[in-house]
Length: 512
Image 1 (spheres, rainbow, N blue to C red):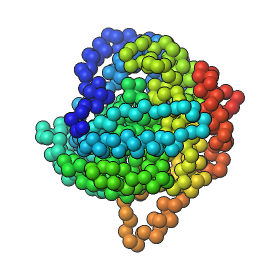
Image 2 (cartoon, rainbow, N blue to C red; image 1 turned 30 degrees about the vertical axis):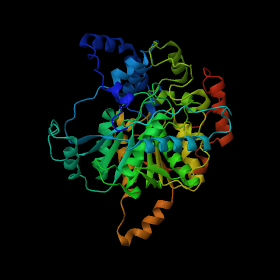
Image 3 (tube, rainbow, N blue to C red; image 1 turned 90 degrees about the vertical axis):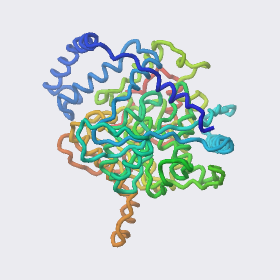
């Protein structure tokens, strides 16, 4: 089992096409001059919605990003994946040690499949077709990157030319705390890679003094649900109970946080739901020849998590002026006009690249429909005034209502995952600080004299708006954070599924 290749990883190692030549890039930028002029004029006149909250540079950057993403006829899935999976050279103040977690035995692989089947069936949503049957992928080794801050080296410093295990050992000399972040990258479940998220993982490791374990989970549409969830579970088990040849020692659950952005935030919370279902049912998992209990981590920390695969929330329409993500109509048109390739459209046809139609409302896919969050560890959620804002607000309010300690931060006027894209902004630095501060708080045991105070602090929730520009903070009321009931959310998802090309009603708007 340990030598079987992961097909997603293999596809990501194929030779990348040559970069776009300078002439073509120049012509593309020239074609954007009218757009940039229009955005700049509206901003200076203070008549665009974003001009009151974003500076000119930020609004121009978002408009440019949106224009490159919203094209009449997008490239095929496979060509887009190749273009965005180019791994930049590793240099500067970062450690990266690449590791492939093997599947120890056929028995372990069988146990993983049986466990995942039991959880998926146990969480089946009431609106799923009763005849739905999941097709489980093969259990394969899962690659990941250990990442940490590497202080005291020049910005152009290369990693030493030594084996990966030795890189890990050298990395650990610079790790100052027991904090371990199990990280899942974003990219709509079909794009990106640990290599694209090295700066984010390095920054979290630097600010926490810990390390990140960034997982190369299998991508859709070639590997639809539940392949990514399976890889997440295997990675979590591998950290708790490492095989004999692993680089790392067993990670204590109280030192681990599951984290991710966008689709990686969805995967983080899907893994948490899976772990909670194992606990609810008293299920153990066979791993390394023993029955293992699977404890919950110290916390979960997600940035702009994608909680509704169908994009049914009104903010997917109303917050479009603040975001670079294409609007719903543009997304639907892109799905229809995209160049075909071997990976997409799928056979049989399906609505979502990530999941078969029968499972689009499954609680491990659309996390808004999770049956319960009661008993979850402390959870951090941050969001902007982005297209996913409604679903993030609803999730935070629901976790709090079910007794979970929630740290919720909403950044005024900011787009999706802004802290990773607009690093020059003070809001970005504040977001990274809030994210990493939470991770440190839940994974670092306080001194004995601070224990009682810390226990009180970890049980309370905080809901905060961070104002643009000033970074002034205003407390939010979790009781009024989301205007929707669970049944209203369910009905919006149903409607979006039934009327795939009809966007959320602009008259059905949550106030900003």
